Length: 410
Image (cartoon, rainbow, N blue to C red):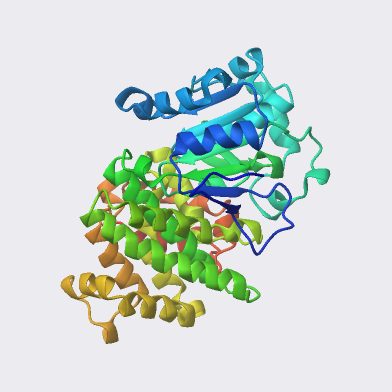
């Protein structure tokens, strides 16, 4: 497939060339140039359905630029769009914005392929699709539904990393329990990084989703299952890159080099999904905070330092490596020292606490108006989450979860 001048176009995970439905990444050109080129030359799509952030549509001309570049291939940019996309004969979906849009588009692929047009049909489909847990990594032939064939291209403006996943999810309003389901061909074919576009993201969104990327890297690196040098290197490199470059963008908002390095760090961190590695309790407990209005990135800001301290007895050596990485980088070390830490008598959790405070992120449940009276229900739902079950130090009881929540109650 032909690339544009000055464009980098490569496998998202070069060390894993045999993935089912492998994703590619593109960077070096504007999002609209890269998208228009690959829609035509790589995917031969004729009718493109754009799922766009409302704020990007209303407050910037970025979506208009994308439409202009795609020209007569554009169908529409309606947000809640499965039926509309089907009626308009879309043969490609492009998302531009945050992770919730790509999640929605992945669900659209499933619904379009399986003619799902009602809530009841969604529940019926979900029963046949692997949900969160080891079965979520099933190969497509083992999943008794029609596999999506429509290409999905994602242009992310945040650092959450959800675009690299073939999972989509939602919250059951009956019990506030978040469930996920996935199919290998729900994942995007191409992710386009445009650091200039990411400047349109609100500061708290960019920084908090960056912390989510840090959480991906940390919980992957700190797992105690079978050692994997490829995963360890990718997650540690991602950790260093995202921490360092988030601090840079906090001080220098329009620094496009730091933004691209952050995006590439997210790419590295998400190798966990392709290696069938589940993160731990920061993710598992964090999922249950979503229905209380806490964003994904904010859950990581609140929970991750406490999770590290709670897990230290089983993965302390790995945490020491994280700590060393932070203290070796002078821009990070300066922040830690300014926040009153000394290397010899602090740990990785202390360092991340200082960094998250430097970024201006929430650090307690109280800051998000979640009181101790809600801990029991949060704990009960957390124990059902596959990522809580995958925590390196087993989370066995409600009391374990309540103990963790108490560490970040505020």
